[in-house]
Amino acid sequence: MGQVLVLNASYEPLNVCSVRRAHVLVFKGKAEVLEEHGTPLRSATDTFARPHVIRLVQFVRVPRAAQRKISRRALFARDGWSCVYCGTSGGRLTLDHVVPRSRGGGSVWENVVTACAPCNLRKGDRLPEEASMTMRRPPRAPAPALFITLATPAGLPITWQRYLPGATAAA
Image 1 (cartoon, rainbow, N blue to C red):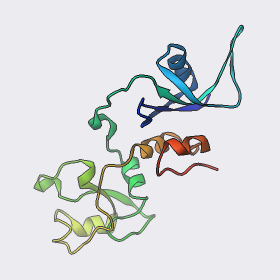
Image 2: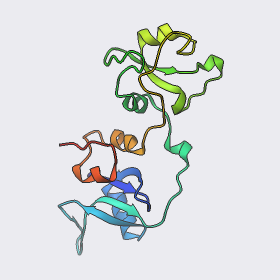
Image 3: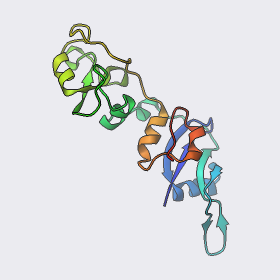
Image 4: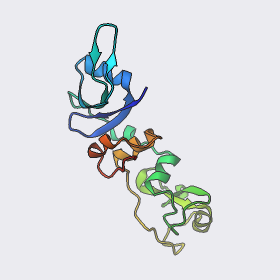
């Protein structure tokens, strides 16, 4: 049925939802339509704009912990599907803790990176400096646009691009 980009009242991207859910939010006055899809929604008696991008009317505070859940797919996408140590893409990618868990390192975005299997094996339970390895980029929490991109497997619609800084749209 299609997907709709949901923005907070501050225009921060929050999520992707179905057209049906977006229409209900708009109909109840909880959101407004910013971008419409070409074909309208029709009922037996009325015609409504088919939402493509909506913005919530009231600001919703989103807990950062819930927004930043780590998954392998999100981690690999954040690191460009390549090893942060040697830069190889392809092959078997693994999750590596910069400060090993055996040394008290947590599973947080700032401590987890993508590593190829040989680099992860070479590093072992040492710090990168101890293994004479350097990271090509420091680990950091991803932008909200990454999660929106991962939620749209067919690619981002062009109309969403201006609401998602740093994201590339599909053709």
